[in-house]
Image (cartoon, helix red, strand yellow):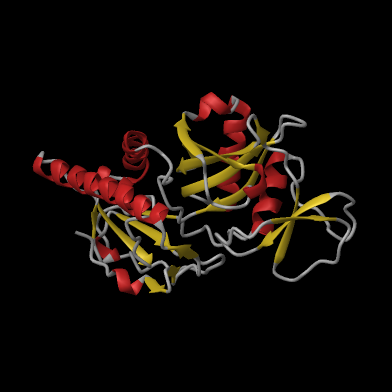
Length: 311
């Protein structure tokens, strides 16, 4: 089992679970217990993948994470298990060294690997800024059209949200309005679909290539909450054109994202896609995704991960 303690990551008080690292607060209700049970089933399956690969005689590539180690609810964890990778502490001996840090901005320090005799693959060490403003600027450079707006001049609905990673605190305001430090401002994308829902296309990328898309839907009135009423996964070519897949690849290259997820919205007004967020330490697969689909999606990501990074 993984080398971690629940108490090092959570505080439980008055039926509220506080996630220490991100500050998220979760109600300890029946839904959360159901999610924990579903996750535990998936966790067990991921462990069985690792054991079966080891027993089959496959060589286990080694992987080290700096500065933090991923917990099992991060997407890289089941992908690593499914790919048969073995997590080790010493980055100087690992085949793969991944920067793993939930911070919005960071200056990662790569260890001295000059004395190694084998080639090492480093992942995400050049991806140093996933703030919303940085994402918006990078998207505009590769797409040729803007997502960000100047709130002091823009006359219309604006999405106001924190620059901080995974805050989920977006709200719609009416511009023009004074700019507030620590906030980002984007145009409101009409990603509505049938049934009074909005649709997010969380695109998982490996080495810049879109591998799978989690199609997430939630009520229009809770468009900024991370609470989905339905989730399935599709191939990128099922929801994006070849040009859009190339745009996603160029965006990942622009922000130096080797592994991670990008949130893509399709504007029903003009048909264009907009990349509104990027995450190099994304969690998943999504809780609302059926267990069988979780397993299938993880296997596809593991295959892409092994091809891209494993020796």
